[in-house]
Length: 133
Image (cartoon, rainbow, N blue to C red):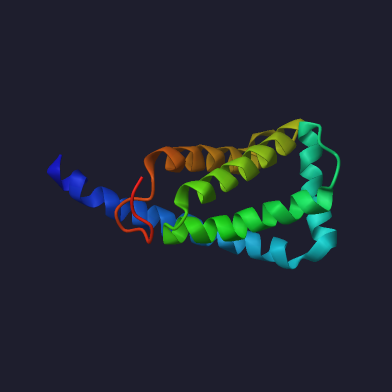
């Protein structure tokens, strides 16, 4: 048990940097896509019954993926970053499920939502820029 106690923070660092970097890579093209792309992404909110301001929602989703990924990777404002990404993945999951996309297309955002919910509870670990609860 002592070995795993010593490696938990290293595992969280690897997870944070890996997942954070991946979400930054997913978010950058969306962020750089401009208003037309943001409106398309923001259309996912209709799956929750919200069909106003799709451009704003899309911009927020793109920011969530890129900047949320950055915050996760750095361990800075970690829980707000995880919460932003959790919310974005819940909307993406709802969109895919309502569209009837099936398990293959729905599984990625569902898995990511589970991951961000767990990280929200666990915290960033010892090797984070912002330490503490």
